[in-house]
Each structure stands twice: as structure tokens, then as C-alpha cells.
Amino acid sequence: MNKMDIVACTDKWFVMPTGVMMQSVCVNNPEVDIVFHIIVDDNVTEKGMRDLEETVTVFEGKSITFYHVDVTKFPCFPNVKMGSHVTQAAYYRLMLSEILPKDIHKVLYLDGDVIVRHSLPPLWNIAKKSIQYRTDKLLRRCINY
Image (cartoon, rainbow, N blue to C red; front, side, top):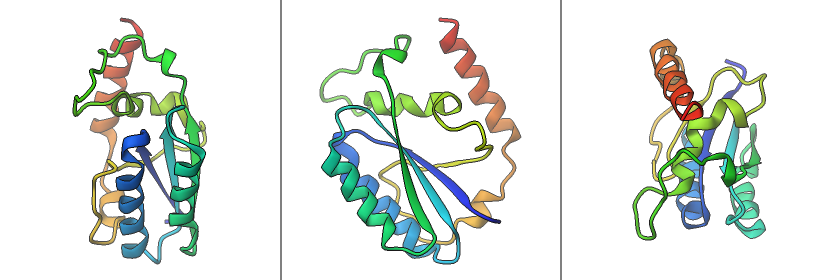
């Protein structure tokens, strides 16, 4: 394995937990080159992004790239109410094929509230065909809404 691409979506309320998740990935996978692809919208501040970047860049072979999403591209998702455990950022993962560069063919999506306690390559190497089919089908339904 040359590198592992890990994706997370966050908003301003989940920057700190996402940083903890990324730290746990880095600590438990020192031998793996990892690129974190973090999907954010305008409510994540420059300081929040800087904090996430500083969490990752102290580890050799680890890097981070941010992708800003335009929330107006999500008209078919239900409105998110204040205090709900589901945020707008939770929907961004459904649009990864539109957000991420086309040369990325495989990613591991981790929620920001996950703590990784072991090496990730065994999980990375699991077949993905059925998961991809379901995601593509759901995405087509949303786009045709």
C-alpha cells in the first residue's frame, strides 16, 4: 500500500473531535502514509482548519487537504434543525464523488467521533464493491429528486 486516503466531514462543532480522531489514526498507524481529506463548509474557521492541520503535520508521512463545499448544492437533503444530532455536514459524505479529485479511487470514511485503536490496513483492504453500489444508487436518487 502506497498511501491511504481518509475522509471526514466536519462543521465548527466537530472540529475538536475530528482532531482527536485524526490523532488516534496517526498514533496507531505510524507505518502508513495517510492523506486526510477533510470536508468543511463556511462555518469552520481558519483557526479550526489550522488546528486540524497542526494535529496531523507533526507526524511523518501524514498530510491534510481541505475541501470547501457550497451548501446550496444540497437542496434535496432534509433541513437540519437546531439541536439535532444530524448536521448539514453529515450529508457531505454522500457527495464525495463530486467533491474529491477524480484520481482518488478509494477512501476510508471515518466519523469525527471515532477513536482508532489499531492499525487500519486490514480495514482498508476489505472489498468495497457492494458498498460503492449502494452509495451510487442513493446519490442518483438524491440528484434526481
